Amino acid sequence: MASYRIRQYREQDYDAVRTLFARGILEHASAGYRHVLRSARAQLGLLVLFAAVRTVVGYWVLGLGAVALALVAIWLLVRSFSTSYVRQALSTDLCDIPTSYLRAPDSCFWVAEAGGAVVGMVAVAPPQDPAERGAALELKRMSVSRDYRGRGISKALCGEVLRFARARGYGAVVLSTSMVQVAAQRLYEGQGFRKVGAFSPSLLGTLLCFQIFQYRCDLPGRAAASPH
Image (cartoon, rainbow, N blue to C red):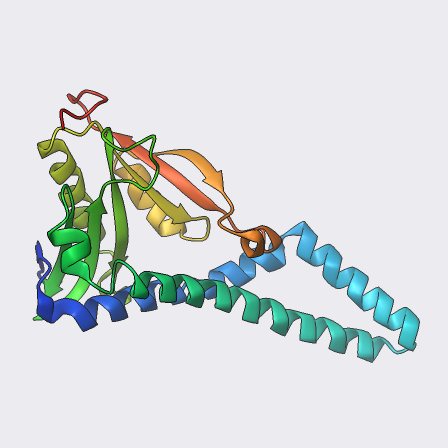
């Protein structure tokens, strides 16, 4: 098993971090696609489409063709959902990581390095939810290269965030992850996070039956409010 070390982000990590993040998000597109196809709404819609085309045209083969086209369209929608999220992240906080995380208060960005390459990443910053500001910090942009999973890197990166928040007197760490990222959910729950909410990020997300899960980890021995 290859060794690794956790260190703070450096400017030379820029391209590797952005590539790692994009690959990590896009690899979940297939799981999102399978999730959509398992939903009762999608299955009913495909059945209605097949029956309608079969009734109007009179050929079951054309009905199957219409279903096949619908399946392709659903895949393109799911893929575009993932790519738009990646584009948004790469053009905002991951466009200027030092400004977003290293020079901002109560923020930081770490990478996991193995064999001279960046194989993992995580960030922490004040949460977007105004109700949590001053009481919690938010774990963000967690990703580990597929070839290095199962080696404790994700757990180590999560531990850095928890220690960072505890050292600054915060009472909790919050995060959001998608419903299809099952391995991530198990990791967070194993580190003491509990699911506290769920929401659909957009109208397209609602149509695709896609939800974002919200998690919270209360830090023992800390007050609910920060002394800042």
